[in-house]
Image (cartoon, rainbow, N blue to C red):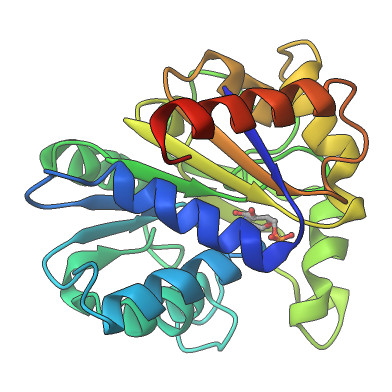
Length: 261
Ligand SMILES: N[C@@H]1[C@@H](O)[C@H](O)[C@@H](COP(=O)(O)O)O[C@@H]1O
């Protein structure tokens, strides 16, 4: 796990965009794993800027969203289908027909979940998985105690997550109780994982993910076993890391030796 600490959310977006693009070099049909939430917005904005400048082209890429609420009207502005289209597909110039979001409205939810995993596999797997982290350490919607080998499935949202996400709805009662999420096992199959986090409210989760024991009470800690996981955080989200100075020194050294980060 590589940990990069930068000054603010904009810099998180810039460095994360560098990492995404760097890891797609030479990939003919990029397959992106897409996260919702506010954390990756500066990354998407930066990728959008570079796509508009012609530095990168996502028009032929494939996208797989991490998760979706179950039972939410797909036309609801906060369905992840709509959020992904608004914040990623349009700004990055992706082809909407090549970007999939789990179907939380399917009659047979587990069949839809299984089919989603199959589609990821058929695409050759995810090249770069973009991730945020919940304040309770969830990734995707894999809540504490999710199995490390879980695949895409239906999960019950914790009260903490529903409270965190209530800001997108009129009241907490409107926040769905269930979701469909890629599993931790599905996420771990990605070739590269780029996790972004900003703000003090993520500091405990970031410290536990990076420096704590690998335990399913902290689902994101499984990323310590990911073969190529890059964590990019601002100073506030890094504020509880015991080894922050070492991470900074290591990153500075790498920049010095490679000429780029
Ligand atoms: N399911 C999403 C996650 O994929 C996201 O990473 C997390 C953090 O969101 P934010 O970045 O807005 O804090 O919460 C949501 O519940």
